[in-house]
Image 1 (cartoon, rainbow, N blue to C red):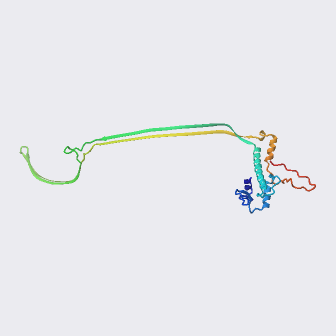
Image 2 (cartoon, rainbow, N blue to C red):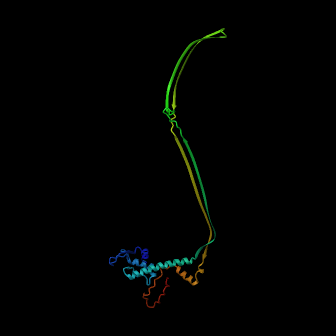
Length: 270
């Protein structure tokens, strides 16, 4: 009730500590700058029909006035909720009816495993480093240049056919050579062993999950006549009508002029 008053009239009511009451607990109180006459008229228009005799005071420092305001606010909330519920019932109930359907699921596993191993080994052993004077063990590298020039001259004579013929001559020749050379001598090889190994493994796994749901449904309406009797329906219809805030408030203590017939009491709002 207090929260409803604060939400509905935030410019009229507030929560605070009353220094004159001697309590440190927050209490419902009026704001300092409130025009009480106009505020009372607003509160009475909104909540007067929910309080017996109407709202005649908003002085919340008076326990009776505060209790009357809180009770009227609670009645207002209850009536609004009852009206909403009655309206929903008047609209009937809608439901979803499943006619048929299908649910399918599929799981596929795909495993691919492979193992590959490559093995390679080699070994070498050469006993070349024998010396002292046992041979081999030579690592010699070298290079150089050579140049040669030579000239030759001479005479020659001879005969053939048993001296019947003779021949004579001379010769003269020159030659020249020049070049570069490089040489290497390498055994001296100690024992050597080489081993190599290579292995490759691979594993691949895959899983697929697929599902499908097909549902056919329709909406169905459940009328109010199947849930309530005619008397109950009439009561629900009355509760679903909004409250007329402009209806005059019944005050039983109000004096009537002489000769004036008594006013009829309006039906109570539940």
